[in-house]
Amino acid sequence: MSAQQVLFDAPGPRARRNILIGNIVGVLVGLGILAWIVSTLAEKGQLEASMWTPFLESRTWEFFILPGLANTLKAAAIAIVTSVVFGLIFGVGRLSHLTPVRWVAGVVVEFLRAVPVLLMMIFFWLALGSSGAVQPENAPLIAVVIALTLYNGSVIAELVRSGVEGLPSGQREAGMAIGLTANQSLRSIEVPQALIAMLPALISQFVVILKDSALGFIITYPELLQYMRRLGVGEGNIIPSLMVAATIFIIINFGLSTLATRLSVLLSFRTKGRKPVAEGAIALDAAST
Image (cartoon, rainbow, N blue to C red):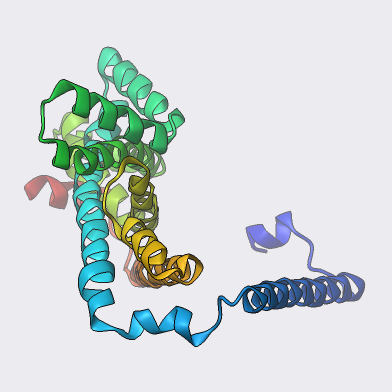
């Protein structure tokens, strides 16, 4: 008997009927809301062809959509790299056997996870602008990257910590049995395995980074949302412009989510199809590399 069967009873005929009725009602409510939105937009003239024809012009893509998308991807790409580095450093710090290191890393991670990312963006934007440490035109990008790095890096640090603690204890014991110290076992054996296990969750966090980069428009960073607002104001089609921006974000995030799902399935398949290997052999192989 599986754990799921132990924890949850299989639904009976009445429960299945109630679930079906609930699903039907939910779909009807969703369709009703969608129809109301479409009808409201039509009444306001937001679905007229003149509102959407600017998106068929090359200048719209050349001067608004593509530059905004490039800036969004630029900020997200930099933040992804720096977040992973930050997460690995502080994730390993939270697993350190030195109490001061573990305590400091824990305080930093918990503090950064509790601070809203938008608040950090505004703080660093104002701090960089008033200090004169960077060029004024570069302050918004740097503030966005720093805020995304600190917030999402702290989340990744927790992923690393939970991934390592979720490994069988025999991994560390096998590493220490062949002469590795606890820190060497952590770096050479446990963290690499945890990274593979948490890869789907890591990619999902990349989706969060990409979405949160849109908050940069509040501190004047010219990302996609900022460019689309400018286009909407100039063309008088602010709602269609925001809808196009939302569609672009949905497509990119859907692609990343699909990648995460496929990686999860692939890793699960490889794990299930792998022949059992002695834990000592795993540790020995990792130590030799």
